[in-house]
Image (cartoon, rainbow, N blue to C red):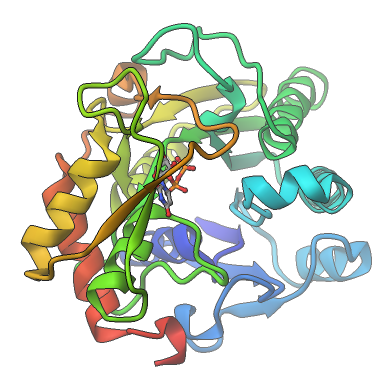
Length: 327
Ligand code: UDP
């Protein structure tokens, strides 16, 4: 298939592009490089552009005929979405509407969309199934939920075939250590802990140790970025006109903040000092996926199970790229 991947120079997108290419698809990346990296894309495969630039989008779809789109491009800092929602709604929602318009004009009616467990907000029960009420607690989660609803309506009205994949905590890096996580600024737990091991930070701050969990720290479902990529490929192969798949992508097992830090201590051999600070606003105690629907629907099983192999792959990337794509 000829596939256009928006945000293919970013963290999850770049891993999906590698896998799609390996599977024999003809893959083109559309990215504005605001948070993505040229070095994460194979030479000659990057079409620079912004989803807010409708002319550029029309040009990209006029230049080549695509069979499907994978849509990763989005802003994804929860905290910034609270302080600057205008930018988030414009980029994520308007940007996606522009993309869907351009697809309709070019008769492309298949899309795999990056959604998030943040659309559930604080779930009533864990593990979270797709039947859980979607009730986001921040603008980022709302932007993704609005897009899910838009996709539903476009499927009904225009015959769009889509998959909305609700990621839990994307983590880890490609086994060969050539691409990985590089956010500026970094806010995610695993890269921050590994930056302490690299001597780039004095300590890691644990946001709250008084949660109702066994060790008092928050529990998350860390899913390897290559497992996310295989799920995207499987979803792409199952898209049907007029139908939508909405699936949780997680492992079904959780790890606490302290378990992540301890796994990083074992992996790196570094003491990794930590200090406990107050809770971070908007952090639910526990987010763990019930991913049985994705397993069944996509005939998919995460290869990385448990926090150790995830931390191991992340460490390989961070050790060899202590300053991310800048060296
Ligand atoms: N966290 C932490 N210290 C940090 C960064 C994150 O204790 O410096 C915690 C955070 O409160 C959450 C978990 O680690 O419980 C995962 O956070 P992250 O930002 O990586 O992902 P999120 O779950 O927010 O998508």
